[in-house]
View (cartoon, rainbow, N blue to C red):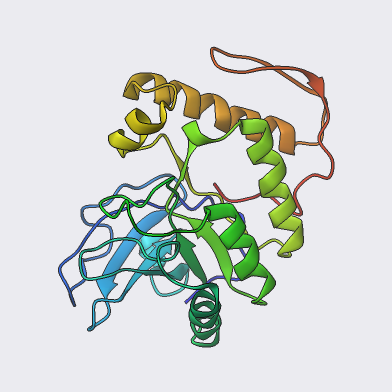
Amino acid sequence: KSDKGNQKAKLHKVMFSTKNGRGREPGRGFPTTDSAHIAHTAFSPDGHYMFFTVCQDLNAYDKRCELWLTILDRRNRWLPAIRLPYDRLVATARAAEAAGFTGMAGMDHLVPPLAESQPMWEAMTTNTWLAAHTARLKLGSLVLCDAMRNPVVLAREAVTLDHASGGRFELGIGWGSYQSEFDNFALEPARARERVVRLRETLEILEGLWSGEPFSYEGHFNRIESVTFAPAPLSKIPI
Protein backbone atom coordinates (compact mmCIF):
# COMPACT_ATOMS: atom_id res chain seq x y z
CA LYS A 1 0.00 0.00 0.00
CA SER A 2 1.27 3.45 -0.76
CA ASP A 3 0.67 6.88 0.71
CA LYS A 4 0.06 8.82 -2.52
CA GLY A 5 -0.37 12.07 -0.62
CA ASN A 6 3.22 12.14 0.60
CA GLN A 7 5.71 11.65 -2.24
CA LYS A 8 8.52 13.80 -0.84
CA ALA A 9 10.22 11.20 1.37
CA LYS A 10 13.66 10.12 0.17
CA LEU A 11 13.68 6.42 -0.61
CA HIS A 12 17.09 4.82 -0.12
CA LYS A 13 17.14 1.56 -2.07
CA VAL A 14 19.68 -1.15 -1.30
CA MET A 15 20.70 -4.45 -2.87
CA PHE A 16 20.36 -7.62 -0.82
CA SER A 17 19.25 -11.26 -1.05
CA THR A 18 16.76 -13.50 0.73
CA LYS A 19 15.98 -17.18 0.51
CA ASN A 20 13.60 -18.16 -2.27
CA GLY A 21 9.98 -17.80 -1.22
CA ARG A 22 10.81 -16.25 2.16
CA GLY A 23 10.74 -12.73 3.47
CA ARG A 24 12.13 -10.92 6.50
CA GLU A 25 10.48 -9.13 9.34
CA PRO A 26 10.00 -5.36 8.90
CA GLY A 27 13.13 -3.40 9.63
CA ARG A 28 15.30 -6.40 10.50
CA GLY A 29 18.72 -6.60 8.88
CA PHE A 30 18.45 -3.65 6.49
CA PRO A 31 19.79 -0.09 6.57
CA THR A 32 17.44 2.67 7.65
CA THR A 33 17.46 6.42 7.32
CA ASP A 34 15.49 9.18 9.03
CA SER A 35 12.89 9.02 6.27
CA ALA A 36 12.75 5.53 4.78
CA HIS A 37 13.23 1.88 5.67
CA ILE A 38 13.62 -1.27 3.62
CA ALA A 39 10.92 -3.14 5.50
CA HIS A 40 10.30 -6.49 3.83
CA THR A 41 11.58 -8.55 0.93
CA ALA A 42 10.40 -11.76 -0.70
CA PHE A 43 10.83 -13.79 -3.86
CA SER A 44 7.96 -14.97 -6.00
CA PRO A 45 7.52 -18.77 -5.87
CA ASP A 46 9.21 -19.21 -9.26
CA GLY A 47 12.16 -17.05 -8.18
CA HIS A 48 11.84 -14.74 -11.19
CA TYR A 49 10.68 -11.65 -9.31
CA MET A 50 11.73 -10.00 -6.08
CA PHE A 51 9.34 -7.73 -4.24
CA PHE A 52 10.37 -5.22 -1.60
CA THR A 53 8.59 -2.58 0.40
CA VAL A 54 9.99 0.84 1.24
CA CYS A 55 8.35 2.42 4.29
CA GLN A 56 8.50 5.97 5.55
CA ASP A 57 7.37 4.86 9.02
CA LEU A 58 7.59 1.28 10.30
CA ASN A 59 5.11 2.14 13.05
CA ALA A 60 2.54 2.76 10.32
CA TYR A 61 3.60 -0.23 8.24
CA ASP A 62 0.25 -0.82 6.52
CA LYS A 63 -0.36 2.81 5.62
CA ARG A 64 2.94 4.35 4.55
CA CYS A 65 4.70 1.71 2.47
CA GLU A 66 5.39 1.38 -1.23
CA LEU A 67 5.68 -1.93 -3.08
CA TRP A 68 8.46 -2.20 -5.67
CA LEU A 69 9.39 -4.89 -8.16
CA THR A 70 12.60 -6.06 -9.79
CA ILE A 71 13.35 -9.09 -11.97
CA LEU A 72 15.86 -11.81 -11.05
CA ASP A 73 17.02 -15.10 -12.43
CA ARG A 74 17.68 -18.13 -10.25
CA ARG A 75 21.25 -16.97 -9.60
CA ASN A 76 19.92 -13.74 -8.09
CA ARG A 77 21.17 -11.65 -11.03
CA TRP A 78 19.41 -8.40 -11.82
CA LEU A 79 17.59 -8.96 -15.13
CA PRO A 80 15.80 -5.71 -16.06
CA ALA A 81 18.67 -4.69 -18.35
CA ILE A 82 20.12 -8.11 -19.23
CA ARG A 83 19.04 -10.30 -22.14
CA LEU A 84 15.40 -9.24 -21.96
CA PRO A 85 13.98 -7.63 -25.11
CA TYR A 86 12.23 -4.31 -24.63
CA ASP A 87 8.80 -5.73 -25.44
CA ARG A 88 9.08 -8.08 -22.44
CA LEU A 89 10.30 -5.27 -20.19
CA VAL A 90 7.33 -3.14 -21.22
CA ALA A 91 4.91 -6.03 -20.69
CA THR A 92 6.33 -6.65 -17.20
CA ALA A 93 6.12 -2.97 -16.29
CA ARG A 94 2.52 -2.71 -17.47
CA ALA A 95 1.56 -5.88 -15.60
CA ALA A 96 3.19 -4.54 -12.42
CA GLU A 97 1.33 -1.25 -12.83
CA ALA A 98 -1.99 -3.04 -13.34
CA ALA A 99 -1.34 -5.21 -10.27
CA GLY A 100 -0.87 -2.13 -8.08
CA PHE A 101 2.91 -2.02 -7.70
CA THR A 102 4.38 1.38 -6.85
CA GLY A 103 7.54 1.09 -8.95
CA MET A 104 10.01 -1.03 -10.90
CA ALA A 105 13.77 -0.84 -10.42
CA GLY A 106 16.60 -1.92 -12.71
CA MET A 107 20.39 -2.06 -12.39
CA ASP A 108 23.34 -0.02 -13.61
CA HIS A 109 26.53 -1.58 -14.98
CA LEU A 110 28.74 -1.33 -18.05
CA VAL A 111 28.75 -5.11 -18.37
CA PRO A 112 26.51 -7.54 -16.44
CA PRO A 113 28.24 -8.79 -13.26
CA LEU A 114 29.03 -12.51 -13.48
CA ALA A 115 27.44 -12.56 -16.94
CA GLU A 116 29.86 -10.41 -18.94
CA SER A 117 29.10 -12.06 -22.28
CA GLN A 118 25.38 -11.29 -22.11
CA PRO A 119 23.74 -8.31 -23.82
CA MET A 120 22.28 -5.58 -21.64
CA TRP A 121 20.62 -2.15 -21.79
CA GLU A 122 21.68 1.19 -20.30
CA ALA A 123 19.84 2.18 -17.11
CA MET A 124 18.60 5.74 -17.72
CA THR A 125 17.53 5.02 -21.30
CA THR A 126 15.61 1.95 -20.11
CA ASN A 127 13.89 3.98 -17.39
CA THR A 128 12.89 6.56 -20.00
CA TRP A 129 11.46 3.90 -22.31
CA LEU A 130 9.46 2.27 -19.51
CA ALA A 131 8.17 5.65 -18.32
CA ALA A 132 6.92 6.35 -21.85
CA HIS A 133 4.97 3.07 -21.86
CA THR A 134 3.36 3.36 -18.41
CA ALA A 135 1.13 5.92 -16.73
CA ARG A 136 1.59 5.59 -12.95
CA LEU A 137 4.56 3.30 -12.30
CA LYS A 138 7.60 4.92 -10.70
CA LEU A 139 10.99 4.09 -12.23
CA GLY A 140 14.44 3.94 -10.67
CA SER A 141 17.65 1.93 -10.33
CA LEU A 142 19.31 -0.26 -7.69
CA VAL A 143 21.54 1.73 -8.03
CA LEU A 144 23.27 4.09 -10.47
CA CYS A 145 27.07 4.06 -10.10
CA ASP A 146 28.30 7.57 -9.31
CA ALA A 147 31.76 7.07 -10.86
CA MET A 148 30.24 6.40 -14.28
CA ARG A 149 28.54 9.80 -14.50
CA ASN A 150 29.36 13.47 -14.57
CA PRO A 151 27.12 14.91 -11.83
CA VAL A 152 26.03 17.87 -13.98
CA VAL A 153 24.98 15.55 -16.82
CA LEU A 154 23.20 13.32 -14.30
CA ALA A 155 21.36 16.34 -12.89
CA ARG A 156 20.14 17.21 -16.39
CA GLU A 157 19.16 13.61 -17.20
CA ALA A 158 17.24 13.21 -13.95
CA VAL A 159 15.26 16.43 -14.23
CA THR A 160 14.48 15.65 -17.87
CA LEU A 161 13.12 12.22 -16.94
CA ASP A 162 11.29 13.77 -14.00
CA HIS A 163 9.39 16.08 -16.36
CA ALA A 164 8.93 13.50 -19.13
CA SER A 165 7.43 10.98 -16.68
CA GLY A 166 5.26 13.45 -14.80
CA GLY A 167 7.33 13.16 -11.61
CA ARG A 168 7.68 9.36 -11.56
CA PHE A 169 11.48 9.10 -11.54
CA GLU A 170 13.38 8.29 -8.33
CA LEU A 171 17.17 8.51 -8.23
CA GLY A 172 18.91 5.55 -6.64
CA ILE A 173 22.67 6.20 -6.60
CA GLY A 174 25.69 4.68 -4.86
CA TRP A 175 29.48 4.78 -4.91
CA GLY A 176 29.86 1.45 -6.75
CA SER A 177 30.53 -2.04 -5.50
CA TYR A 178 31.68 -4.18 -8.44
CA GLN A 179 35.45 -3.76 -8.31
CA SER A 180 36.28 -5.55 -11.58
CA GLU A 181 34.22 -2.96 -13.44
CA PHE A 182 36.43 -0.19 -12.05
CA ASP A 183 39.54 -2.16 -13.01
CA ASN A 184 38.44 -3.20 -16.50
CA PHE A 185 37.26 0.25 -17.56
CA ALA A 186 39.76 2.35 -15.55
CA LEU A 187 36.96 4.12 -13.71
CA GLU A 188 38.10 6.81 -11.32
CA PRO A 189 38.32 7.14 -8.42
CA ALA A 190 39.03 3.46 -7.87
CA ARG A 191 39.60 3.53 -4.11
CA ALA A 192 36.48 3.08 -2.00
CA ARG A 193 37.24 6.00 0.32
CA GLU A 194 37.61 8.40 -2.61
CA ARG A 195 34.44 7.09 -4.23
CA VAL A 196 32.53 7.99 -1.08
CA VAL A 197 33.91 11.54 -1.26
CA ARG A 198 32.91 11.81 -4.92
CA LEU A 199 29.40 10.56 -4.16
CA ARG A 200 29.02 13.17 -1.44
CA GLU A 201 30.00 15.86 -3.93
CA THR A 202 27.53 14.53 -6.50
CA LEU A 203 24.66 14.65 -4.00
CA GLU A 204 25.54 18.22 -3.03
CA ILE A 205 25.74 19.24 -6.70
CA LEU A 206 22.38 17.66 -7.52
CA GLU A 207 20.68 19.51 -4.69
CA GLY A 208 22.33 22.79 -5.69
CA LEU A 209 21.53 22.57 -9.40
CA TRP A 210 17.94 21.47 -8.79
CA SER A 211 17.32 24.44 -6.52
CA GLY A 212 16.84 26.73 -9.53
CA GLU A 213 19.09 29.32 -7.88
CA PRO A 214 22.57 30.47 -9.01
CA PHE A 215 24.96 27.76 -7.86
CA SER A 216 28.73 27.44 -7.52
CA TYR A 217 30.73 24.54 -6.18
CA GLU A 218 34.36 23.78 -5.34
CA GLY A 219 35.18 20.20 -4.41
CA HIS A 220 37.97 17.66 -4.74
CA PHE A 221 36.52 16.16 -7.94
CA ASN A 222 34.17 18.87 -9.23
CA ARG A 223 34.16 22.61 -9.81
CA ILE A 224 31.17 24.69 -10.98
CA GLU A 225 31.14 28.44 -11.55
CA SER A 226 27.87 30.28 -10.99
CA VAL A 227 25.24 28.52 -13.09
CA THR A 228 21.46 28.32 -12.94
CA PHE A 229 19.66 25.16 -14.04
CA ALA A 230 16.21 25.35 -15.60
CA PRO A 231 13.74 23.84 -15.39
CA ALA A 232 13.76 22.78 -11.77
CA PRO A 233 12.24 19.39 -10.89
CA LEU A 234 8.45 19.20 -10.78
CA SER A 235 8.85 18.43 -7.07
CA LYS A 236 11.73 17.17 -4.97
CA ILE A 237 13.19 14.14 -6.78
CA PRO A 238 13.54 11.33 -4.20
CA ILE A 239 17.18 10.20 -3.79
